[in-house]
Length: 226
Ligand SMILES: C[S@@+](CC[C@H](N)C(=O)[O-])C[C@H]1O[C@@H](n2cnc3c(N)ncnc32)[C@H](O)[C@@H]1O
Image (cartoon, rainbow, N blue to C red):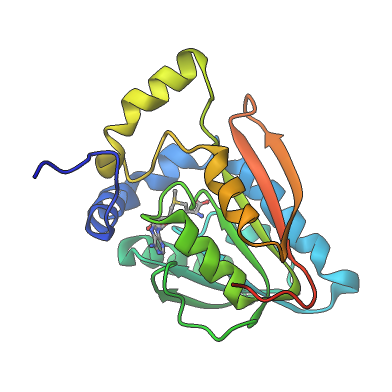
């Protein structure tokens, strides 16, 4: 049976990001910097009075966001792609980022951490990439402590107009690109509707050209992740 080219498998991702790794920073540093900065600022603001906090960076990639965290933000980064992680490790060594505690190969949809392990989770430009956004959100909600935040940045697809047409067309190249150009807000909204213990704290458009959206979710105190 012919495969739907708008779906992405783990194998597609492994080969797409092995191809992207050597040129990733060249293409994706500048345009996505405001998104990374906004997400890192949201995390830095959680560290009340400079208290150390434990943060999981899901889909850390080449680690472009890592130098944006304040020293008391202790980061564990995970990614599926070893070539991307190798570049992140080199960046950490080069910049002497002592607050980056570990960089591990791991699937965002099956996190190897205990429940309620982290004070916050950050995932810039990842939800539109993973094969199953809902399973990834489930895992993030499981490992974050009650009272903790999940901070996301994504391109949310246009609802209509020329951009929506372009995104629909590009979506047929999702497996080769390594992300879904067409990603509707309803994917997040549907998940939130099924998780009453998780609250939408902020949804804000970001430069350039409102292309990306910062999304902050909070696991309420006393809420179970399921
Ligand atoms: C667009 S990059 C974003 C990287 C980084 N956060 C940034 O801001 O540049 C998406 C990353 O998600 C990783 N990824 C994709 N699927 C994954 C999965 N199931 N588990 C863990 N990482 C995954 C890719 O390997 C890639 O490094």
